[in-house]
Length: 160
Image (cartoon, rainbow, N blue to C red; front, top):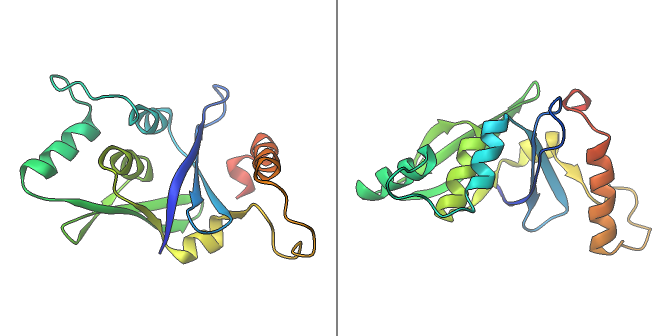
């Protein structure tokens, strides 16, 4: 398992699905995950202070786990099949199936790590510095980000 961080959430046009970009903490791959608008909103909303009198579902789940004495240890992107990602949240060592968007939203609210199975990254990950170009001088980070943004502007879920 490799640790990832949320790099960016993109919501562009009404006919394009929102996209969350997860980046390896120690590595050069990113993992683009298309999701519903509500899933993307939950991830973006994780940066807001929760309303204690009207919590959202992710805040409520986090509070329930805490109240029952549990700990959300980590979330994991565990599989990728036919364009679909599968995730789990690990509470007290017990993995529970979850949608990736919900798992990521919970991780951001609780501060737990996001991890991804190596085979998922090998299959669906995108290298910012593709293999075979090692002989080129490494581009500065801002050039890498710009190249990846250009890639995102021209890619669709069907490309995967």
